[in-house]
Image (cartoon, rainbow over all chains, first blue to last red; front, side, top):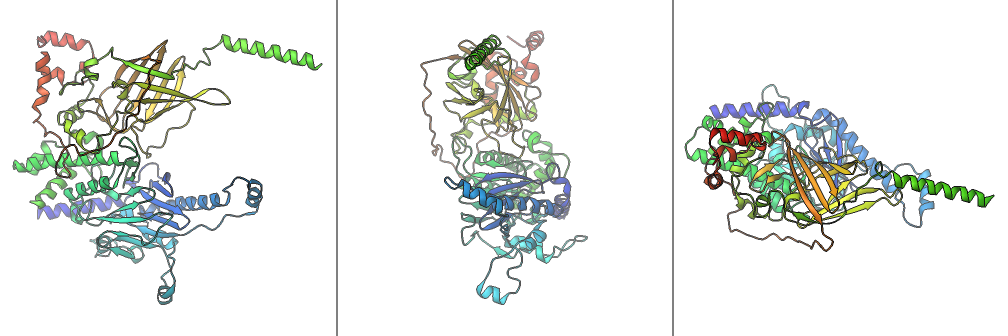
Length: 353
Length: 287
């Protein structure tokens, strides 16, 4: 009973806090960071957003908070326009004069549409912009599909693991509004999946982590750019949020971090190479994930050792098993405190027993 | 007329050149480029053989930093993720590696726009002098960090941000990725002295200051140093070596071996200052 109450309280806190603009990082604006090739990171809209912009259109990993959608769309349009403009003014040797003349006459080519949205998990700081952003996009279709489904081309496709759709379409908690139909995933998968064709010059894999931050987590791996978008499995701003009520677990979290490391190859001396876009915080690489994996594993081991010695949750908290990492990742206030993290690890390991 | 004009111009150029030659201070740009060999005048036992476990003397660490070090296991370095990790920009000056510094020169102004420092087992570390801005805080961090610098007379003062997590002593004492570094590069003839000042809001209670010396070595060539990851230890997947809190008996050996009071070995800002020796003497703890 007590455990269930804790879950409800945690879920309410997470939903309330993640839905609030207070956790949007920075100055209230959305900032663009180029990562590699067609991949960009948008920061400041709640959860980080990964964007692939190129000749095939736009693919977004997560959509941020609902109240940041206009700024997110403005940032995406800026990237779309720059692509269109750069495409027209790309001067080549021997053709400078002709290109310069043409540039004066040309207007910008129409921008390519947002075609895909991938949700890494169900929290509202990552799916809040789904409805509006999807509506601004377009699905390219034809043949039987276009003929039989009148709205098949309306809006971008929203891809997520099945558990995300199940939770988004479930009956809402008391005093919580239902999630609009148009914000729901249009395409779901159960095990890992991949886009059936290259997008902006590369293959894209969507890898399910079954019980990490939640039970519906997806890693999105851009194989050509060698960039992994992790959702909240990896963040640089806090301890990992283990959402027990939504199927998260500490051991699944560690497994997911190790999977990111399995996919990653450093460029030189343990840095660079595969770049990792976290759910919150700064851009990283495999070394940053390894430090984070080490931290989470060490804390899990300490709490497990205390549980083997029959220490109660209160005794575990009093022993301060996270003391050495608290100045970096801990918090005594806000939506995810150190105490809440310790309790989640403790209860997750209790469930395992 | 033309000859007269040319003569006036030539004399003007001569005067200008003479004036510039006579006022080097304002435009001074000390040349740090060259091959530099480390000199172990300071802290040789810590730097070459390596520090002992539990030796936190003189480090302004807080309780969190002390716990990270107490629970650190050297076996961590056998993990594939860490086998090729180089020292970070703040620590690598203290390593036993030779150093090569090269320079970039603007072809128009002929000013030095950047130095590049590279040690035997490091990454290239650019030091920008062209007044460029530092990246935003959401950009990635590296072992070298992002360095800008300015001249203060003949001394070069750097500002380093965007560091990956590192260490301030090679026995597990951490330095966080939120730390920043200030350096003073000072050249006296064939000797290079670098003063490093680490500010770490996570693990340090005060700035941590060190100086390190190098000597010009014209015969030096820093060879390549590739690194391949191998399976060093056959262990179950996912194991991260560490020592549980309170279980590391190895950290007790250092003060015993050197006849130090145990509390001195635990470090903290107080142990950085000479007055701490007086305190130890007064307490009768030191041998």
